[in-house]
Length: 257
Length: 264
Image 1 (cartoon, chains in turn orange, red):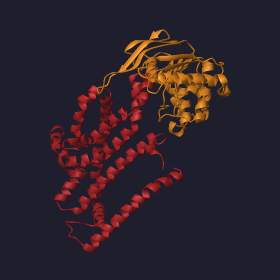
Image 2 (image 1 turned 120 degrees about the vertical axis):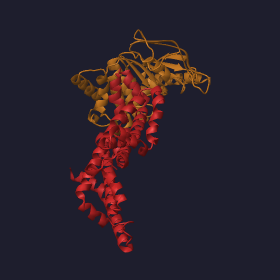
Image 3 (image 1 turned 30 degrees about the vertical axis):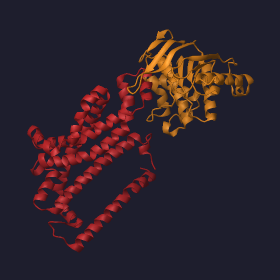
Image 4 (image 1 turned 60 degrees about the vertical axis):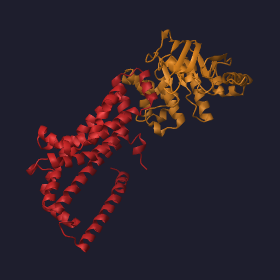
């Protein structure tokens, strides 16, 4: 599902100070089935942009169009799923019931939704843990659970807001590999907010660098690597080259170069 | 019940029972040694003797009070959770109505009990309403704070999947607030007993249908100290049973997922 963001402005007002402009005319064009990483200094407004695309917020100017439909607050794109920074599984539901939740809320028949959820749990390698409660799962397992919950609806647009920031490096690389596999299988459009340049290069076909607040796009770079990504990629000269170039972009974004 | 569960229960019950027996023994010894005038103080053995002699009367009174407590508590659970849900629905509603719930907390029960007698006549209904009024506030305020404490991301998740308001309420807000609601009900359970006993002082039925509160008043007037102690002890047992009931419900609802109910 294609996403078009044109001239989007977002300001936050607080009583204490003047309005803070977070997004200052952001343009972004994402064709269907593309995996795009959104990078930039912390607090620059990447997450705000993601929330605007999801219909969790309204822009003060410009437009967000998803799959040909303009999006405003509380008008969520259909066939879209959102993965939050934390897993946010409901603690009183077992893992399986958490994955069932989106289908339940959309009124799918019980038999069908159970099959889909079980299949999805198998896909993320959590079949054995399906009757466990979130408090009995490790952080990495919880995030895999939240990924399963997002993908069980078979979304055509997946928004990920720094989902793996709190994980150790090995777990994070495993989950990156899992997301990549799932993306190759299903070809959803993905917007992935991250602070990790390596993660961005590993996963994305395109990396967009935002400036410090108020954010605008400072670089929009194609990641020209083989479409199938595997762990060996991390040793390639091209891979390291791209990471280095993104690092230079980041310095510009931070205003240091 | 498995032997493991049995041992867990025993591990919980034995220490407080031993402590109680030790205190009663000290009390008994102290009364026998110092032999205070019986209109001032009496021994546990004397209380027990009188209580057994008038077991029928005390049992009936305990039952009457229990009925009033049960009605009052059930009413405050239902109304309290409902009011908490309504207050949480909207900031304006909360601002408009929440200050009035504080009145429940501050108005003296003995002052409104006479009004209840005028409207409902003395009896179990008026006493149940006393128990209800006294135990309502903690249920409202805990339900409200429980619902307010649900993470924004979880609410947004429900929006993103197009959840209807009832689904948001029954699949997110109420289950998410269960730990808080249980904390509120635990406080309410004890307060309901206090409310009923104090309510009976003013609004209780006299005669054969009297509850523990009236037993207390009559025993105090007639200087029947053992009977007074017996009635107070039975009211305490009723309070402990109420709190125990809430604890059991909390365990059933939450032991699989919530830290507060996890075994040590």
